[in-house]
Image (cartoon, rainbow, N blue to C red; front, side, top):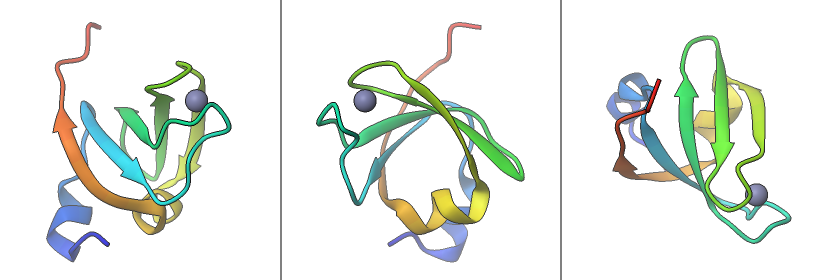
Length: 71
Ligand SMILES: [Zn+2]
């Protein structure tokens, strides 16, 4: 569970660990874009999805890393 402060601080480059794994087996996703909707990329298979912010906040266990995005 994220704290309210952690939810507010979510930003592009954050690596999020989710409660349930992607079908590829990875729990970790990189935030490509934050806002009302989030663009996430699976760290296992590189597949991208768009999710409403509230769903990202609900599904995230913790922020495990922050990376510089190459674009
Ligand atoms: Zn995946």
